[in-house]
Image (cartoon, rainbow, N blue to C red; front, side, top):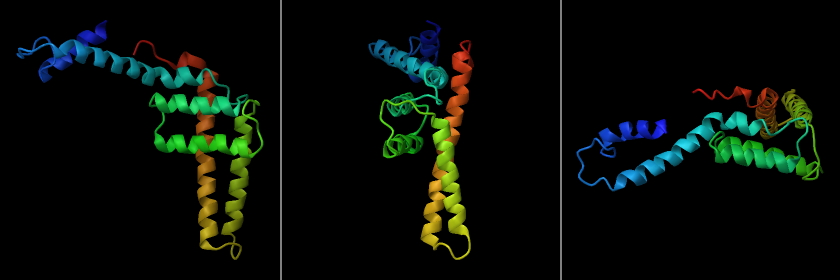
Length: 171
């Protein structure tokens, strides 16, 4: 595998490759095995986003599937902890809306309605005399979260529509 030969080359200056002057090379196989696992993860991270999303249709997805999607993206390193929190809230909101875990939903339409409602609430709170600072701040946070969630799901939908074609296997 070419990656292992590249790994040996990169490890050599650090004392981990075969061209090092270290007398104890017993750590090399373990180091390379660990690097091999990291390479597999890097492949998953590089093409993982497209590959994972090619399996999920945002216009017909169950809350359970969406939770699985978010978990897979986080575990593969495609989304960070903050993004995980934003996207996990979508699943909670679906459940709070009475949508059963295994009932398919058009998540784009759901989040578009949610964002529009949050924007209206924010706009209303900002109108002179209709809300205090705390109410305005809460409405703004809700609107911003809704917008972020919708942006993510729109991105997911575009990537899904493209399928795994977005993966550059030659890279």
